[in-house]
Every structure is written in structure tokens, then in C-alpha cells.
Length: 113
Length: 117
Figure 1 (cartoon, rainbow over the protein chains, first blue to last red):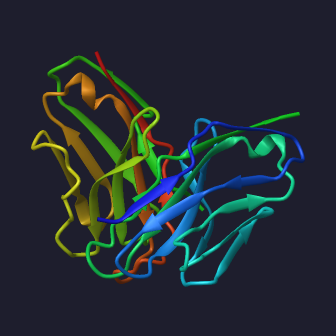
Figure 2 (figure 1 turned 180 degrees about the vertical axis):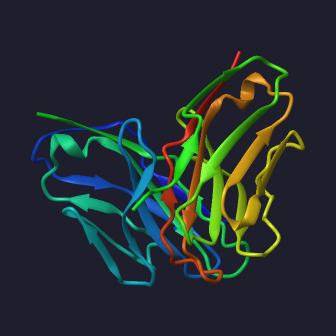
């Protein structure tokens, strides 16, 4: 079945550092890809998404590019802030079949002042 | 507008008791999902309702788990004869999905933290 693999955390950075959180997926077709963020004590919320190959999703300074050739959707941000501390989930969803989204295990990001 | 709401926010119960968890999706959203989130784990899919289609129950871990969605809106997840391994955060999400699609965003509620003693 489909799967999503994320780098294990926690990722600990200083404020203004560059962030990369790796995400790779397996799928039989061409899924839509998502990054969700979960702030402490809250539910998940969409950060960005891309629905076809080579699309770039972006929001709040975060970016991720749908790379079909490497089956990846790595999340990047040029300069993190303390307020970015949260858990980040990568997810994929294929059209056809069950349509059930597949989530990675989540990567905790801790940003120190 | 109002987001997805869940109640209760916390539930502590004794092993063997039944519990009901409630989800109020965003008005007009045709799709509703239940997930379970255990410490250090990702989201475990439980059940998916979409419009008038038969629900996808493929993620329910045992026959102690059931869910219903009344009138295409509110959903209740019921766990019978709770076990300690049922302790987790139960998340509900809804999405617009006028038809089955893989591109729509899911909107999540804050979750219900269930503790089984």
C-alpha cells in the first residue's frame, strides 16, 4: 500500500536557521501531497499542498516541491522563527482506489531564540 | 466561520466502559474522517464518510469500534469495552469533497484525548 516516510525528529534549530524536513512517498499513481502542521494543543492545519508533479506549494515562508523523479516533497524554510515550533506531518492521497490519505509519523521542530 | 469541533476535549474512563466521542464538521462539508493519534505515532486512519456513499470502515481496529454520521453532519465514534491500548488522541477532520477527490484540504478538530485506566 501507499506509505509516507518523514525524517525522525526532533529537529532542533536556532532562530533564523535554514530548515529542511525530508518526506518521501510510495504510490501506484500520482498522488496529491500535503504538509500539515500541528501546534501544541491544537489539531492539524494545512500548511501547503501540491497536486501534480513539479508544482511548488508555499505558505508562511515554507515551500515544498513535488518531485516525481525522486518521489519526494521536502519541506523548506529559509529562516525559522520560534513560533514555527510545532509538529509537521507529510501526507499523500491518491485519486482512485480508497482515497484515504496516508500520513507520515510527524517531525517535531523546536526553534530556540 | 466555525471550524471542526470535537467533544469532550478530554475523557478519562475505566477499562471495560463504553465511550462516545462527538465530531461537528464544518457546515457543508460532505466528507468526514476519524483518526487516532498515539504518542510518537502518525495518524492512524479509522473511518471515512463521504456524502451518501457507504462509509469506508477499513481502518477500524476491532469490532469494539463503530461510528455513525447522522444527517450527513454530526458524527459519533463509539468504543465499547475500552482497553488501555485505546488510550490516544482521537482526531476528526472534514473536507468539502463534492465528489471523491484527492486534492481537497482536510480541516481538523482539536481532538479528544482518551485515557483508559
